[in-house]
View (cartoon, rainbow, N blue to C red):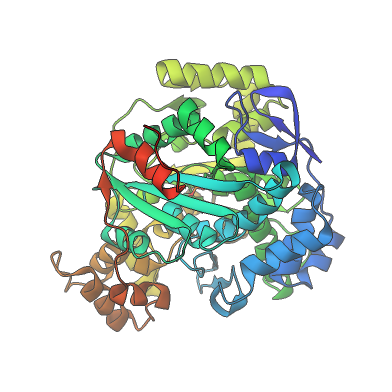
Length: 504
Ligand SMILES: *Cc1c(COP(=O)(O)O)cnc(C)c1O
């Protein structure tokens, strides 16, 4: 199977090229030229398999230039070997109220990014071998928190790779900072930059295209690569857990027969996670509604409801920071699909977005959008209420991002009267990753100025839930990375990580 670009349907690359390259040269995103289809009988068969088998089956349909053995090696390395709690990467907790919580945060960094970033390094190193022989990949990441840590854990000590993460000095939570600065591994580097996330992102993009650096890297047999969610290698692993969740619900009789439809509720930022659910539906997974949940940065709610995408609005810093985003890159892939691969129209909208901060789609896109999706949002107060309500009524503790999904699901039920459809709520982070907000939602003894680890302890005692060891052990870990650099010095930092002497 080959891959096309959303901005030029004439382009054709192999799976390994799409993964190694990350993004198409003209700025488009790679999408598969067709999608395999799974029948109800296929679903019944998958239901008898474990997670890695389900993953191998779905991956092999898309990675036609990988051998079965290579795919098996990748999924085994990612999802077994104790990386995920009990080797069950994506368990479902069924609540009394019928909500099926798909918990994607039992990996090394306690956020759903692990589901893809534990697999991506293996896909990437194999892809590079297929197209470039012996070069080392230098992964550059600008992060606002979760992606940086998950990428570091994924690429830690992976042969043939180096990883450099930049985060905004004052733009990540204390826990996220701690997670990154105590990172172990011989091929990792982390640096704070003076500035915000946009500065980090701009700096990284500039380095990617700097001709001098490019030449120096080439002389040293190194090439840049990306671990962003625009990389197909990050989306593909996310399709798997929607199939797997359906199979689990089939196997435990929550779903009565293969073919019964489910709702999927996704707390959304860059539109990667919910796009994977859309692709799963396209591939035959019986999905009724894709429910897109946003926080106060509700650009997607407006888009799905009205067809107007408008990023010119106030940016809100919320208690669900991984969804604080105004330009959702992966929406481009959905638009490409809904226009039946009309790259010219997609290019037009993306140009309008860059020039005027806004574009509007026509009824031919809006109608299927309404058919497929339901969209809603809630603010920080409502997010905390949702945490408290789930805790009080179900004794279930969820994080702030998951709580946004729970709130929007309740809105959906109220508006649609759809109380019958089995609904999967995608739970994207451990509550301990956002302990401050979660504690303040459930406890009347919350003190704002208490140290982070005291709050974590309090949350555990109050709720009788265990602190994930990955978080507990951070307290005693040594800080390895304390460098802060200016935007101008990012280049030097990257060369140092690549062990290249700057030329006089
Ligand atoms: C990244 C992230 C999201 C948003 O996912 P997208 O794929 O960007 O839509 C939601 N919740 C958490 C905890 C995240 O880290």
